[in-house]
Length: 263
Image (cartoon, rainbow, N blue to C red; front, side, top):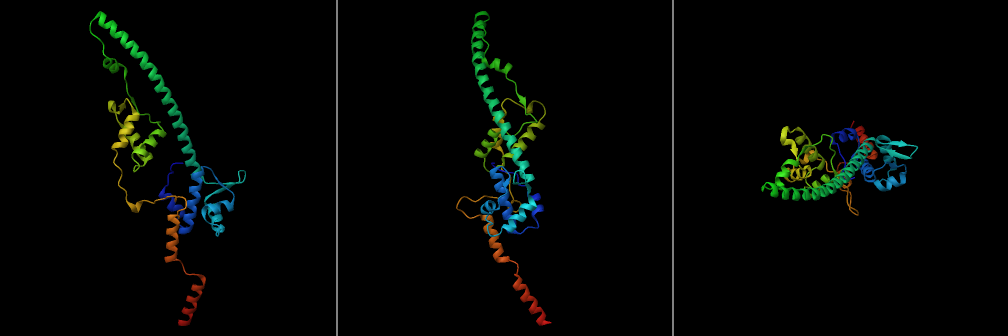
């Protein structure tokens, strides 16, 4: 998957009781789920290797049992939210593939029709020159034959539109940009909402869209480290633990003895 919807509010609400280390492991499980686009295998050794929890399989098991559901028939761990997002992603791919094939077929048909139309235009021009000495120009024919269309409310984000947005304006969020584009043009009344070429309209929209201003305090940046590089999120968690770790049992016992001695 190119990306997935990370709902910050839901995530914070569901994980507010977890430690930083537990949140880091839970995120790794979700990333592994989306990366493979399938449920996690019921193999503790494999999962502990891929999440860096070989020394703490008890925590890994607890997170799996809390946030995932074990399917005994498949012998795999399912996550309901991940399954919904992956299914939606696959439906978009299928729709985009069908739209691409239909677009290619339409272009081929238009090319053939243009050749036939051009031959007809040339013949019509000859007839008009012979009879009336007033030729009918191609522009006059296009004015009569070219008709625009409105944007369909059922349109699903085409894959080629997504790719264009990512390549031309990487600072934009493709899905949000598409939703704004769709809502704007569907709401347009009259001739303003009619376009001859929606592909070109989308490209112009992407080029002219102003990137939204972001507040770093409202953004949770979730990144997967490159190969052979430390996980930035886990390194931050470890650093926090070194500076703000809770007292050990031995330290708590020593503190209790000192309080008793003062009394």
